[in-house]
Image (cartoon, rainbow, N blue to C red; front, side, top):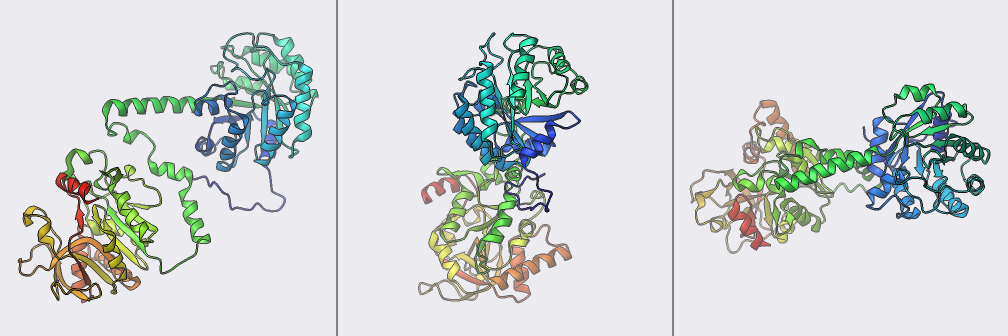
Length: 554
């Protein structure tokens, strides 16, 4: 389930319900309802995704997420900023743990006004002294004067901008050892002062104290309970005693802490991601929670639709076994080249040429290929399929003007500039000095080209050279260059490439085909392919020696 950060749906007339109204309905529901703790935007989305009807914005959890104590060390404006992200990220009401109201009645007035402005449904304030101390720390904590706390409640109700905004009065008499009589006395006074509900707190290990309060209170107004310490009491007993809301108060931050500790310790110990990668959420799940797809859809609506804008498609599905241990936990495209992943350097080159729409096809260890501003496609069959299958995963992107690139190459900026300026529906870049790259030409498989004309010292960028053949096994006299893994397709060329991929799918040759096979078929069908020559100034990274050369290249 993907939660949109910005809802574009418009409710029908007469059906509009604010989040504060939704919380008020939960408080007065004939059934016992439940709120789940969240402490930031992503946890708020997860709570909503899980099916909860409301969120408890825990002061303990938000403070812990900021790395400070639950003693008002995080300012209320810092808490307000977190709440704004949570409210934007979710569509269910948020009841915020407002501690003591962040000060006196005037501080609460300002807090309530700001919470209403940000779409927060309600605040719970406790009758202790500012700055507060967490209820589970120490014994006999001092409580606020009843009249002073009632004045705080009245001030909050008078200032609220939304009639359904809820102010919940949290009674700490049981926690502080003042007993049931004091708890009932305070609850009655707070209800008379205008509180929309009472939160009764206890740190006993059983729920008897809370159930006794509920019976004594006799449902005079909604009562909220927090069974953090008395969690073994069956929930049905709370239902039978007419508890309005049950808050699961701090369990997401505690679960996250356990998971992060375990993951960090294991990665530190193993110095590898192999042991944990399959047991944690994928990067795609994080992107889904952040709703990247909504942004992509919005860009199509609101950004200029430039049909001539050039896109880039990068094949980055392979591991790169020749790099051995360097590609155990990541593919070749993500290895570090002077402080940045290879794929990042390639996309930066495209960006500098004004190419912003970039798609990359992932395969091996795909969750590690997670750079921003790239549209990722996946070839989960990368081990048993060829390059054309990977390209087919991005077939929807093969339209208009396209740059094609392998994900393991580097080249000087002028090479891309020259390619973009060259006419032709399908244009490949070939290195005329291919033999100079390696003293042993047989050391690796090369994509060699035979052209209508060889490279000469008089060759100019605007010279049109056509391709006669492309492959791996030509005699030295036939070879005019090596294709570097970079190509350009015009809108017409993109149609031809797309049509040929479909034809290969239909005749069963696509699965194991390379890009060389694809271009060879186009040549056989008498489709013209153009070549531009370069003289070095590029490299592909296949092994450790290439990686060392890349450091020098940059």
